[in-house]
Length: 417
Ligand code: ADP
Image (cartoon, rainbow, N blue to C red; front, side):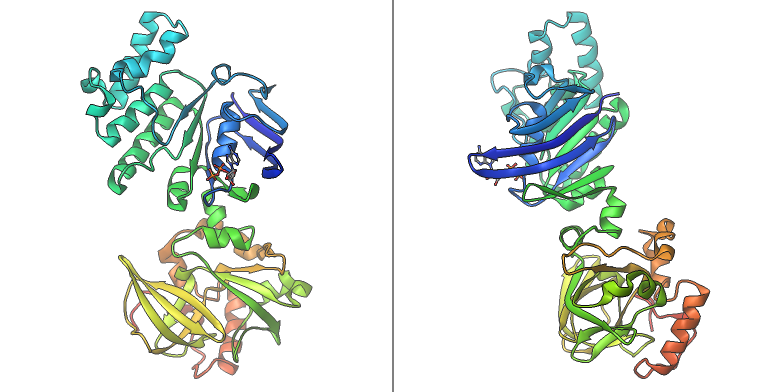
């Protein structure tokens, strides 16, 4: 077991504090991704673990021992750099085995490890080439091989794929995942790319200005963002954050008379927290856009359409707010007046301090439904019988032009009218 523990770690350059008292337990065998915008401190954390950057205060433990002052070579870690840092005058084989030779590993052990790793990363045919005679993807694999061959338990990767083009990046990420499945090292991976973080990480640590904003599984970071920053950073397009909203008469008021009825599950949870101004997060795929009024819908104007390949981003004005819906079908045009609603179980409320106000128990209990777009598409609003009845009552009496239709027959994104 090799865990890495960061306990109250801070880092300052002069008077500038770039890492602020962070606590993080990196577990044996996990693929942990340090994610965040440029300058948030990802590389600094990685380099402190590697031993290249001195720690200002706090304790760094590897495998239970404090290693703050230990030289990088003695830390059981290997690091893959963004620019690969291969030795240009050495062949591929020499690059991969150099560190083992320096550490006087017996020749037969070196050969055995080399064969295994090079075969796995398909590098054997290039043993005699120099780095300049390799493509970017091959150089990247040599850098991975060089780190893997050392058999260290913790693998530190600093934006290792950022020099590759998009296609190669996907292939290289797959090699990395296979490498992890095969050798089970603890991996700490730095990236500013949230898609890469979501696909690679078993856990994501999202950083902002040297602080941890959230450390959780990709699913929870996406579906249960701890704060507004996380909701905005994760997802493409990111979650809509509607600010300055108010709650009154069982409705969420989006300004200019637009609003929607809030189900009892949310009202019961949020209670007094619903006083004052709030932030509401809703992901583009959880915004329903219809040409006709429907239960709990609000009138909206289509301001713009953004082509996003498989989906279309529909930029809407609802009340005083602007928001984006994503749809697999392009059934509206710029300037159209449409009607929008939100999935009741896919709302995110944040208080004035921008922290999450939590989720109703029945929403949390539906974890298994998370991420299954098809299923979610059917789950607009009413998600259990009691709610459905409540919804129906409301729809009949409140919704603009609504016929109070059967909640089981809710309109949804992608289902033609
Ligand atoms: P990231 O990897 O998230 O882009 P870094 O860890 O490289 O961010 O940097 C975090 C912050 O520390 C940045 O504001 C950066 O300017 C600052 N920083 C990094 N290295 C130094 C240094 N040697 N001297 C002063 N400031 C530094």
